[in-house]
Image (tube, rainbow, N blue to C red):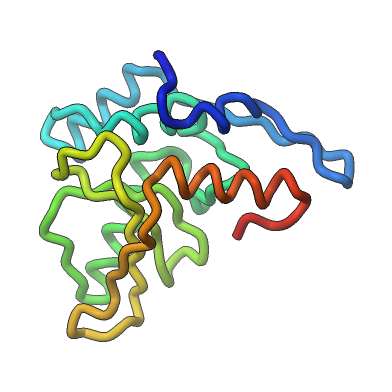
Length: 159
């Protein structure tokens, strides 16, 4: 797969921390990405930047938290279950890209926009019932990951 949006992440397949620990990105195969598209986007291709993220780091990404789920499909379902538990509803197709503070919030992108590099959205489960539980972070997926990577490479925690 040609990488257009996540070049910076792709250039750092591993990172060594000051502690000496080395962390490696782990992607998922295109076949798995297509299966996710079938499950969560009515068999339509994901936005390009999301496909790149999954290909480069869909199994493990040192600047995103995928929760304790065993794979992307399980993480997607788990976050949807949290929406139900908190009586929240997203009527547009979406894909969760980060599940830090699992059970409290997640970051996602909408899949029904014509953007190849969609804007990151945040869902906070204990937010206001009047819609205050959703918020745009005003960063595209690639900008958000580049920003977190810069923070991580400087030695700080990206979360």
